[in-house]
Amino acid sequence: MTNFELVKSLTDLPSLMEEAGLAINRGGFCKCFLHEDRTPSLKIYPDQGRWWCFSCNRGGDVFDFCECFYKLDTKSALSFLAQKAGLNIIGKPIAPEIRREIEEKRQRREREKMFKQWVKSETLKLAGLLYKLDIMIDKITPKSLGFEWSRFLMESREIFEYHYEILLGHDWEAKLELYERAIDG
Image (cartoon, rainbow, N blue to C red; front, side):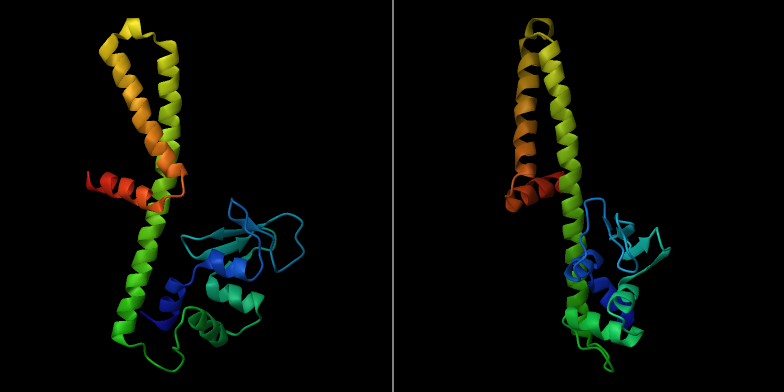
């Protein structure tokens, strides 16, 4: 892994852009810093570590951003981003133990990202299931299903609602416990 690849893997593009004062909306758009912009035309692709402005047809990665926004050359952009990541790499090879530590941090960030995506996905699924269960419970009378099925529907709804409340809440330990149970089984 080259120093460029290493620094790139450690740099979160949206965080870097927000630190620079760009306001990123929920859709991943912000106003372009390369020209006057009334509406956000610059799209950030966090998974790819890239950005693209649909107005001026320019884009790039974290290095291109630093070069354009801060007016740095490539070597200075590398140095700037390495320093932000807590590395001193200019002119020195990175020790294997530091590379391992960096790789572990990158993998941890990747796992956290997957976990957050899972929370979002499960929240949407549970919301849909709760909606469908509510319709079923409202439309189907307990007499037409029988006692056991009515009880099953009500208990299922309680379980789904409990999980839904955990996913919407701020208790990350409880969310992590749900995630681990889902992954394990």
